[in-house]
Amino acid sequence: MLARRIIPCLDVDAGRVVKGVNFVGIRDAGDPVEVARRYDQQGADEITFLDITASSDERETIVHVVQQVAEQVFIPLTVGGGIREVADIRRLLNAGADKVSINTAAVHRPELVAEAAAKVGSQCIVVAIDAKQVEDDAEYPHWEVYTHGGRRPTGIDAVAWAQKMAQLGAGEILLTSMDRDGTRIGFDLELTRAVSDAVNIPVIASGGVGELAHLVAGVVEGHADAVLAASIFHFGQHTVAEAKAAMAAAGVPVRPAREAEA
Amino acid sequence: MQSVAVIDYGMGNLHSVERALRHEAPPGMQVLLTSDLAVIREADRLVFPGQGAAADAMRELRTMGLDRVLPELAATRPFLGMCLGQQILLDWSAENDGVDLLGVIPGRVERFPERAIDGDGRRLKIPHMGWNVVRQVQRHPLWHGLAAESWFYFVHSYRVMPEREEDIVGETDYGQPFASVIARGSMFAMQCHPEKSAADGLRLLNNFLRWDGRW
Image (tube, rainbow over the protein chains, first blue to last red):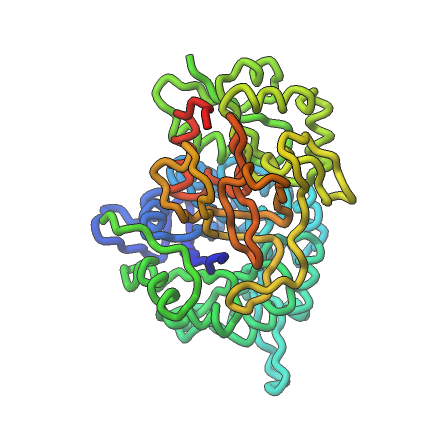
């Protein structure tokens, strides 16, 4: 049976992992290679790098990060942030990324998704959707797509947008609830379920995880195919192996974590 | 010097495959990423990866003249097909309104059925994307050191349906069991991506790089 995936997400700024990752036994937790390797050892199913570098001068550094990690970590790697055109996608794939995630650029120019899927294959194209609940109607909830890291509303309905992206050739949807992101109170399960049930491609739930039960709920109640989390894996709060154990205990099929090496 | 050639026929990003092979190659073994027919013929072992549409792949292979020589090469040295490189080995694919393939292994390539349901009652999405179990259904030297049920990473919408049970060495469940790994003589081909399947995937590649091609 296909396993539900657990995906640690790392924010990378100018070539370094930021927001703090604190593994016991690693001297320099900011080194993306070290961090990725440790998550791999814990049984992470994939790793996502979010390039939050603001300065365009330093954009190339993410390419080097991907190169270094891909030499040593042999699980799927996704890179998001700052991707505007097919050439950006190619550069990252050539460096060793397996997938790229496109957000704002897809809203600006939806054809980019179709062009990219035709060039490099749908399996490489993740469309990231930042969604926020529209407050006018609590009985029939709906959500709006935001861009620019959740700062700009677009007026686009998130569920319809996910369907459109799937139609244009997205291989996967990375769905982040702007209402929940950073709150640590759990995924927006209604949003996750609405999107996951509306499309026939995998949906990765993101935004709001504060404890392991939230990951389980994302899959069981939110119908997510994969769950992405950042902060609970940082600072040693939980390991990926513990997340897998919690999922398995709830009857969710997971790829078991390897025996701990450290 | 021993060499392994990754056949580059313009279908997908092959750097991950190359990197993983380099990681596992014994000292002195050359790892080549090439579209040069002469180099491919000279290599001691061949890796045939690929992602994308079957019709595009067959067009590229014909242009390069590979369609005529690959069946013989696959029969005469250790040969590892992956993903689309596995599917191309069968007779025919339903993709792109029907495509004739290389015909090394008798059988067809069909899309997963729409609206199938998994063991836990969930609708199965297409592509089949993520980690799933490969269940060994026959002994094979490339399984050395791997558990009888090992996890591998998959991304695909079509899967092979070999005619002969003897060609199937690994099965995976996605709604129904399907043939995820096939083999015949010196040819071994898997739908999943060993280059992205962590320690078990590397182990399989390592086995391949040391395999004498006998089964």
